[in-house]
Amino acid sequence: MQSNQLNTQNFGKKLFIMKKLLLSTLMAGALTLGVNAQTDYNRWSLEVNGGFNKPMAPLTQGFLSPTLNIGHADLGVRYMFNEKFGAKLDYGFGSFSEAANTSSPSFSTNYWRANLQGVANLGRIMGWESFTRRVNLLGHFGAGLGQVNPQENANAGFNDNVYNFIAGFTGQVKLSERVALNADITTILNGRQTTAFDGASNITRATMVNPSTNNGFYGMGAQWWTGTLGLSFYLGSKGTHADWYIAADKYATKEELASQIGEIKDMLKDSDGDGVPDYLDKEPNTPAGARVDSHGRTLDSDGDGIPDHLDKCPFAPGPASNDGCPIEEVKEVDYFKKAINEGYVNVYFAFDSAKPLGYSSSSVNYVANFLKRNPGVSLEIKGYADELGPEDYNMKLSERRAKSVYDLLIAAGIDGSRLSYKGYGEDTSVDKRSADARQLARRTSFEVK
Image 1 (cartoon, rainbow, N blue to C red):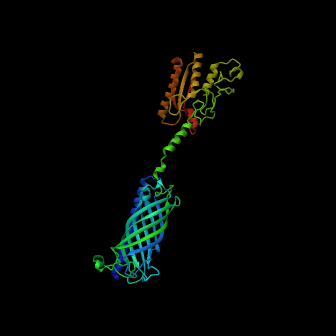
Image 2: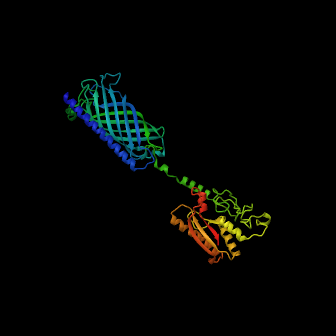
Image 3: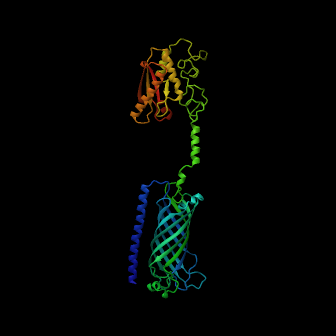
């Protein structure tokens, strides 16, 4: 008896150490993977199950167990390394008893087991997502320690310490992104078991080695089954768990891509040809040749109610009866200087481009015509950029923009000796928080000398 107690104590210490080792190993591996991997799914789950058990062998001759004995429960924590493979640590306990309404003698045996198991997400491996997104199948296999403790018969009170191998399948039904229903069938093989499940007889070396001494009820080793129903509770901040994660869902299909490309093409349509896409154009029916702002609205620079493209004096207010020109004689050069100084005449560019936008070409033509009518006037072309990008790059970009307008004026017949150009880099006068303001910063302006 004293030897049995010492063995039990030593086994308990070893079991405690093994439990700590298995749990710490699982936690360390899981934390390492969690730190090093960015995933779109949750990895952890808690599992609670309960149901039936069935001891198969060894049973003493004459002792019978029910086909389905209600008396098993298990608790587990599972970590998935990816959507197909993982590991779990679980603890199961329960009791065996005799079959009712039979001639079997009475017996009652408690047991527990603790196992570390590998888990395979068979549903994802076999591609079940092609026909269902709510039903899944897991496979599990592992090993661990346990104890068989008869409460009746000859071995009552004896703690039979065993090791075991365990394997099974778990069917799943997805109830929500946080909970799944489990139905599990598992078989357990006990090693080094020395008492029958009923506690009425022993398994000796002779009965295992010499079949002639075996009464026919022990088999090759201790074997029992469990069948349970339970729930998996998924933990984590992601929208779904690895059990149900399908990597292909995060990629757009060909049909979705084609639809998105079609939407982009529709957005970039410019029905009135003013250089402003329809989705930004607040006047989508601007007449051909009209000068517009970055929102596609017709410009009236002098505010006389006559659009610039119809106003013969776009920077000097005048009545419609005089084609937008003032009745009194005015010096065109004075109004032009005023318009330049107040920033009414500009050439605009697209992001990171030195090619003038289409709706800005009228500004270049206007400047060219003015210089031709006033041969004594010289002009500086000033290039600007928005704040996006490095400072030195913006300086070079603004100079290229000024040079491109300079080339257009030369091509229009203006003597190069009357022109100069310079890049000023970022335009600091605009509101950097506004995308529309940044568009206004991508420009060249003019200064009459």
